[in-house]
Image 1 (spheres, rainbow, N blue to C red):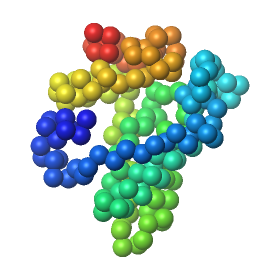
Image 2 (image 1 turned 180 degrees about the vertical axis):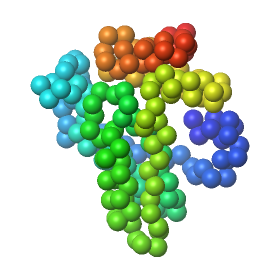
Image 3 (image 1 turned 90 degrees about the horizontal axis):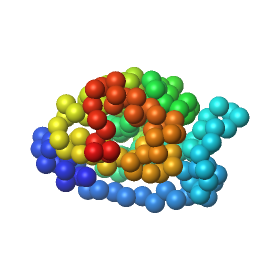
Image 4 (image 1 turned 60 degrees about the horizontal axis):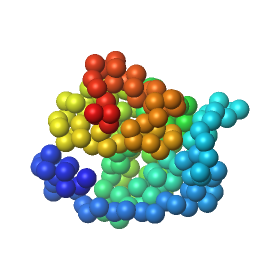
Length: 181
């Protein structure tokens, strides 16, 4: 993916470091969800799907901030969206603002503030599809390889809330989902 981003956006090449892969299997040790265990998707009494992994974005952003500090970076980009999502509390603007302040407070003052950029925060799925199309064939190809399905299927099952949101977004954008092509 990094090589494709460098090729598609050469103006960013000098800003990108090396890939850094972290094992986040620990989430499966502390949460029992359909994303961390072999169990069927269902809606919980809380109103959230059982795909909600408590603390997932908290952990992701904490680790990203630590890595950003090590690489002398001050912007973290995440794809969370508050507009049309499954109600996950860690995809809301309030949470991101809290994490941004927390990351800034957790780093030495010489680092300056940490910014958590959320370019998709208020975009509908259709607007996100249109953006991906406008960014070119490589971005479109990445979208084709993405997995949205709560059952972990590619292409998706078509029945879970994530698949329904994705299908509605592509339909509203007037596009065919490349994952189904």
